[in-house]
Image 1 (spheres, rainbow, N blue to C red):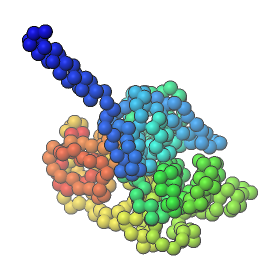
Image 2 (cartoon, protein in one colour):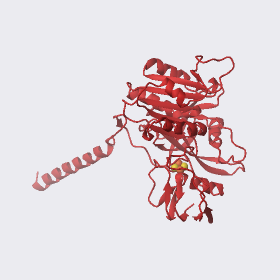
Image 3 (cartoon, protein in one colour):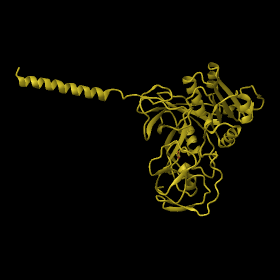
Image 4 (cartoon, rainbow, N blue to C red):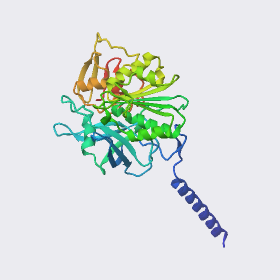
Length: 404
Ligand code: FES
């Protein structure tokens, strides 16, 4: 063998090694991330934008079939990265409006169970649509789910998001307070906490009108039997005739501070509240008045924010109105301070803005702000892009030019 041939063999061998090394690196599973909550490896990161999911199955959760769970698996069949219990999914759908015109609508639903790498679960309740604004009704999408979304349907979803999640410190007992279908994120929190923080004390207060509205009842009973540190108090505001306390519920009326004082042991707790606006508007301020520290009260309301933060106060009408220019809609309007946020303001004037959570968490209402500045009454959990703002939680601090 000549020196030249030998050199050729060595070069070919080296090249083959390099190719093999490149292939091994490319085909190796992506380095796993670490789940900060559960300390486990994550199979992959959450996605950006929309991802297609197929409805694997649906399951009615009450006798009236007005509350139904949907199990959603990714069309790409890649495992789902863990989310934090309490977070929600954002759905983008194309639905016909009252005139039969197909419109894009965005809605958020809490994940209603702890992480499963194969499928997400949401639980949706039928909502009667108000006659005057069917286009804004949360019932538009919820009822579409219950009436038309069948196994096999394909849905477009954004990744789990939201800051309404259980704190990590297992030494602080958690008090989970749910009103109606507000049980969904709290049930997920309870399931996750019992799996990952089995020694943590958990108190669930679940308010419904009567037994027919209860969901996950069998699961809650089983969880209570298996975990002596999990305590459930079911409250019915209007029990069915012939039913008395002790007969599948523990108290009559509404969840209030008096009930919490009666049931909870003395000591420090973290509170997590999710329910309809009247419950949130009364209970969250009452917890603060009771002396619970602000950072120990976590809440998520349905739809528009219904709780005034202590800093907010009642806005006085502005002496000099602020000018808001909506460039895309070719409208310039006067902000007088009568609206809680720019999303309400835009909608009240017939300017269509896509929205989802309406509480600063999903980013759907993010809008380019080409002039002026906005303020936020509460910190949003969504990271807003530079030069943009979240209309659902923003108020103008001066004249604005918005790309909407
Ligand atoms: S609608 Fe979700 S952030 Fe505004």
